Length: 209
Image (tube, rainbow, N blue to C red; front, side, top):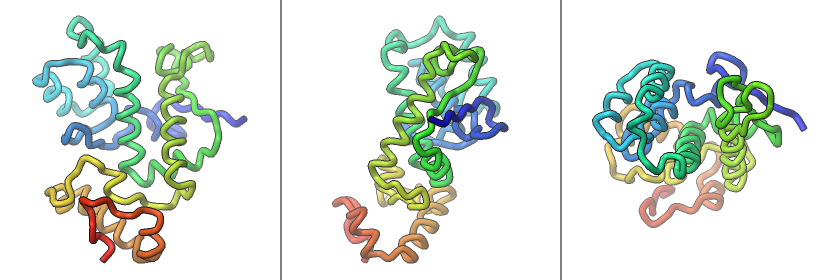
């Protein structure tokens, strides 16, 4: 089976790195990268969250977090895998281009190749647990359950399930750009055919009319 290894955002498949600059919406807030979100949620101090969120470089975020290990939430070891899954899922569900890249890996084994990390990565020699790689493959399976077509743009209630239909998110920036792209796609695909794949939930009733 093919193996896909990734590490730095600037290298092949760098989109899989938590340091890759892609915003995610979680807890009704926009986080610059997955790294910003995960490193913030390690702590219970929301003031620290605000401090981390405005930091530009994900590496600086990671460095700050490593200096604050004494402030970690007491249940971090129990919840860290679930938190990482939530963040990675948001990243690949909320960005069509990244979803497409992940789906096009097929059934390849995805490995974070980092000699400095034996938990989220392979430790550099394959002895690490590669938890991030396993999570990416799990998210890939979740996407495949929805559709095997990497070019299919998912509807807003799947991509952004926590954003209310009437919210301001859809009228500005990222949300507005997505709605326009999705609407064009649905028109080209055919509204009825698309609706058969993705019937609108009650909160989005009348979307295709």
